[in-house]
Image (cartoon, rainbow, N blue to C red; front, top):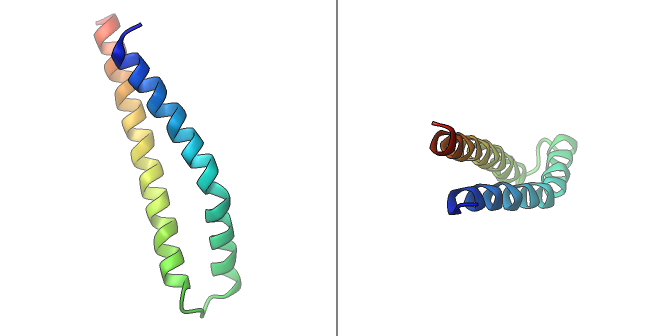
Length: 76
């Protein structure tokens, strides 16, 4: 196997590990925001949730690009 495949597999696995480890914290922040809508810290918690969504989306897009790139190099 080549280096690009190992980079792709490692990127996806590390991303899943980080995603699942941070998921519970984000769920707790969301529950806190919905319970206390007028609280001062809710805007910073909301920003962290938004950044988590953005980073998860970016991770998914980069993963798809890496997989497509690997297939292009080996099947094309």
